[in-house]
Image (cartoon, rainbow, N blue to C red; front, side):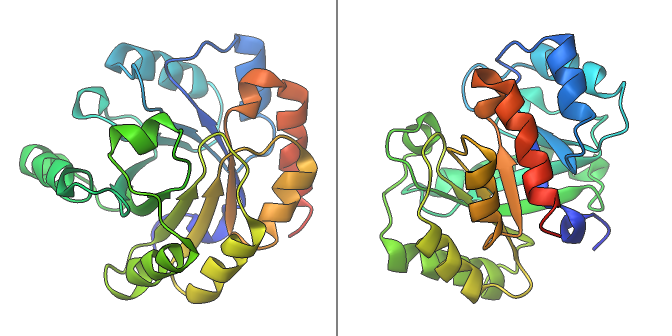
Length: 230
């Protein structure tokens, strides 16, 4: 691996369609988080992505673009996350969009910067769930998706995305038992440092997103809570 997955315990995720003050962004970038993800579902534009990138670049924290549409792809990030939505009912979100991107960008792609994620979206009310036309998996399905991510697709990441709701720690534990080389990333519904710590007991990496926009102080406390566990 040429990237830092082994050392990523905590990530913040910023939505380019949402406003964040310079003061709050500075606090996020200087918080001790391992990296900052830029990504969202709705209204993600190139202009907003570039604006957020330029502001994050004032700091030394690694910056990741999680690609949600072709139009907002831009150079300048340290890493690029490419989701493959494993519980989508349509091949488009598992393979077709990725295929189109490879056709268009393969000559300029640096695979040292690209990380493909096996994505499993686990909140039926989430915009991402509806947009990618997912079906709601049961626990056995999720465990099987994780197994496929590692043993069939050999993906570096399996991402359990609860997208605004707090997930089930027992299922996260079961998924982690399936993974040895693939890293387990958990995101969704973390509202305080205790929940961040609880999920980090099983996941390799926790992602904190919405809390940034509802309670910055609590969001910042999740960093120390997670990093102290190492």
